Length: 52
Image (cartoon, rainbow, N blue to C red):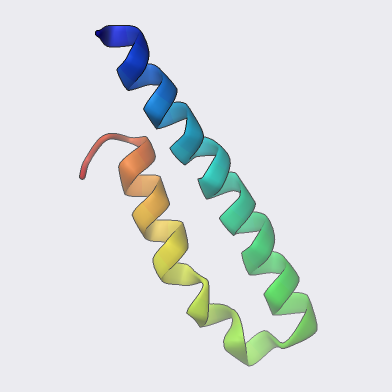
């Protein structure tokens, strides 16, 4: 049971890191629109820490 919880949290860590990369990419291309990526960053970080 514990290993399945770690696997599901692992995918959230990967998605969180991808969203951080996406944040910086959007920031470099169109700086004003980088706030559109922030909800994904915070949500995936909370899910990776198992807060949600």
